[in-house]
Image 1: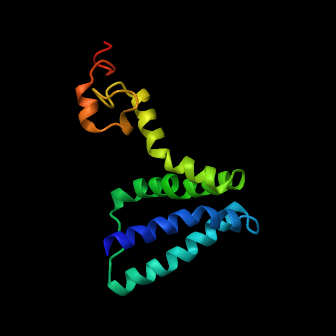
Image 2: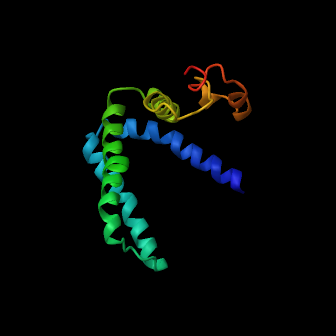
Length: 142
């Protein structure tokens, strides 16, 4: 049953790029982003209300939560829509799928101790291969 759910989620995410590309022919990127989030948020808030889930956020968590929401949801979605407007759905899907690799490479070169002992293509190698090779690690080059 779990594998069927994972297949369903993969299909929804995969079709998402083509659907958005098609929708952007009739909508602007910003208006489509707003409509998409309103249509998703309304049923979620209704479901939370029916289940009695409290929506309170502690005072000290509010500002970081707003910042994370703006950066991780709002800005990402707007930039995603504008980017998809100027490229193909398949190119967009490939770029998004490579984002963990980009994040690892940025961290690798932005921080000296991010991946100690890991060779350059580390995100693609199994842990045993990265721990056995120290010739390309940052510590070996010091």
